[in-house]
View (tube, rainbow, N blue to C red):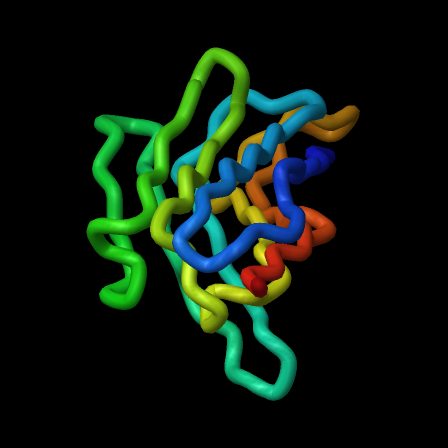
Length: 125
């Protein structure tokens, strides 16, 4: 089993910056990729950014390119999302996820995907 805990959300003015963090904990052997997904009220959820833990390759949604930067610390099983030039339309609950997490259990190893509980980001003046 693994758990993801996010932090760093809050209220920020348009044009401001925030940094989100997400740490995976548990009996983790490996993680394939980690990323961020967001859900705004009344809108469909959307992928924001993802980073591979093997090689560090990144993928961004078109609407955040040039404004958001995803990075990771494999030793800490942690992913960060640096958000700059925030807009009101960035307001959403941001969820961290971890793909293909292999953990140790009493019956051997298990590979599964995990999600965090979400952190609210509000961009408003």
